Length: 262
Image (cartoon, rainbow, N blue to C red; front, top):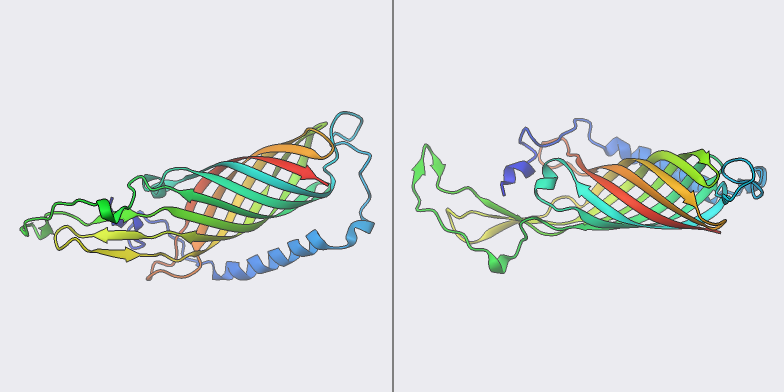
């Protein structure tokens, strides 16, 4: 494993020049607006749709155009770009509370997934052969070895989607998630040319998160719905690392979810 793929100074490292500190203010504004809509008391001004189905007429579809719901989802999150060379896809879980507002659905969510490294870090089971000290063209015998721990992600985010009726009891939706990732991982650098000791690095834990989101939801009863969706996730540390200006990490998530409307 080559640490250069994890070094912000290398050309292959994904960088962006405008670091997302401004995005923090934008995030706060968006979240305040979503909380206002979510917990507002404007329901008296919103026409009730209790007698309607998604298709706008009679049928077997349920009513998910007003009210609240709880959603539990599970699926697979796959790291992308250079990150997929280090970590395996992980099982992802999320739990959310939704408010249905005719064509729009707003939700507040928490999630968790835990990537496993392809080369697991076990300091008690590392065997390396030290170099003999000779150099060729000023290059040492062996390059440093980098080993990674598990990569745990705790997420908290708000989501807004726009719904398009396909038929009675079936809806297509598209929108975006915005919030934060709290990551917990580290890696150790071993230099076989010097000694067996290692340098442990723990990157920034707090990350800004945004993801476009597409999916389909199907109504089973007036209170139960099932959905499938995918998201393309972008997240970036909220603190500068060296002089790199910032880093984007990416992953793709496929999720199936069950919603209970009340």
